[in-house]
Image: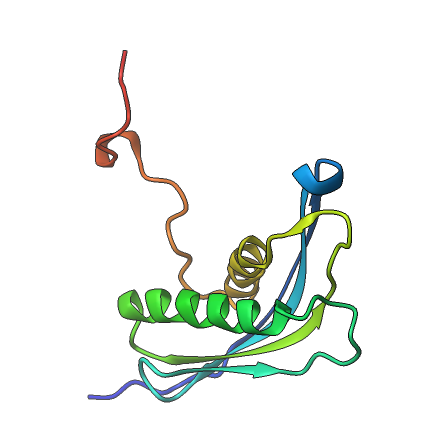
Length: 133
């Protein structure tokens, strides 16, 4: 028996600045996530206007979003997901960490859409690298 599909939406935004100059990092990505009735399928759409971002930003962001969605849907394949990238800016004096910005923007969007969240940290009893004194 197939369950009724319910469309869900979530908005995600991550903007951060860490450190100063070339040793610092920054990231800014805004996106809209939507569930799809196609189990395990995903799409990434670029809706960014303007050019306030570095030349490699689009490729890096689309790759990071695709990688995140592939991993997420490998665990939660009961629906599909569509992501529209809405806004991006680059920092001219810091390293742009779009991958980190995508990760946290996706996490925020999933949370707002009330979808299952990926585990961020392993519990100490599940992590082989954890040292228990």
